[in-house]
Length: 166
Image 1 (spheres, helix red, strand yellow):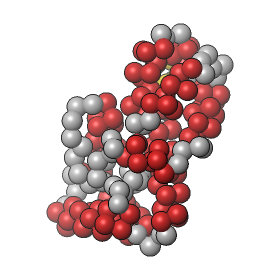
Image 2 (image 1 turned 90 degrees about the vertical axis):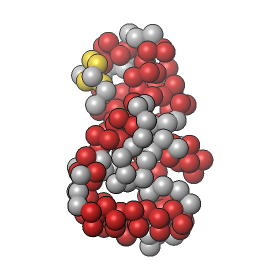
Image 3 (image 1 turned 90 degrees about the horizontal axis):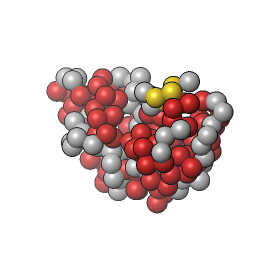
Image 4 (image 1 turned 60 degrees about the horizontal axis):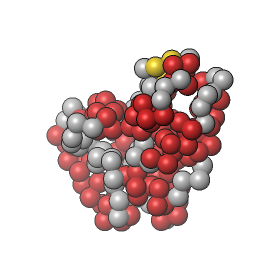
């Protein structure tokens, strides 16, 4: 974690390296880094949130390229995979029945919507995630795009909270 003051004074490339793992959308990280200096953490987060509001289905597809299936161990050693491993801690070590139900739900979701199911796992149990997965299978395509984008925003901002301190 880095203090806001220090983040404000990093070279651009080092600032990008810190915030890029928050979401696989380089344009978001670049715009956030270019907005420095921030006079408060609240201003940083307000800006970070504002930059997420124009995300669309194309941005969602790009961001999902770095997200593992829920309940599966993220592969790779990249920073985003490491964050996913931490966030899915409550899901990864659960019982076999839950793991099977998540795999089946993921398969149904991917067949229905053509992309990986995305949900903020941090703070949710495996059972809560499974319930949300089943509920979101009932969404229309447009509803699900909005729901997935909202989850992407939440994940991104939660990750940013873990990077920048006051």
